[in-house]
Image 1 (cartoon, helix red, strand yellow):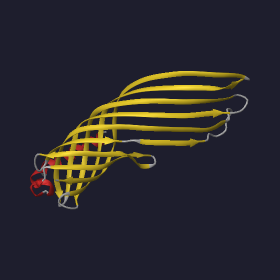
Image 2: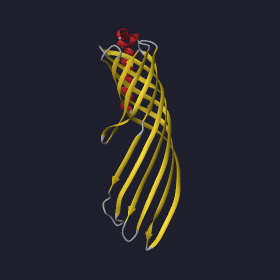
Image 3: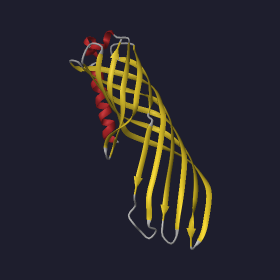
Image 4: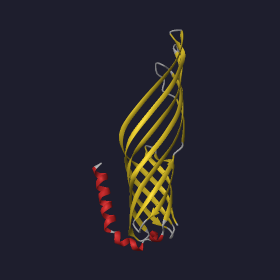
Length: 236
């Protein structure tokens, strides 16, 4: 955490020190720009796609702008897993889930030209997330005692907070640039998880059938360092 704070302070000082160099920036004559980026997340399996990030920026001067952003991250996941045999002799485990969500943010951008055709900028502001996940899975077992559990659930998650981003921009022409962004966010997260389970089978030669519903609400504050975006910026 301390290391991240130090990096952001150093970056801010660099931007302030180079403000006067902005007069020759390629984007200084532009009033608006749009950004089209991929939202990425770092995982144990490398970078994975997390959706599309769109934004519109209004430029007030050669070093400041306000950006309104919107992102959507539909994600379909299916898996088929076979457990190692144990005393319950588990059979294959099937799972599927579908996530859909949106994020809206409004932030201030402070940029500076560090070398020819390359800008460095800071981007910070508030954001709001709304995410819903629908999931289902089936676990079955065989043997003397056998059974099957069919589980379906819907989890709704909401979060709001503030983000801090460092961005780099490389102009390939007067109106188009490559953009990459990395950052952190601090958010207050709320979750509502509703799960319905149907279980049936046989235990000690006695059939059983059961239905039950569980509901859980959680709330926490989270610090995330996984903001990663790559894409294009178009000026007009």
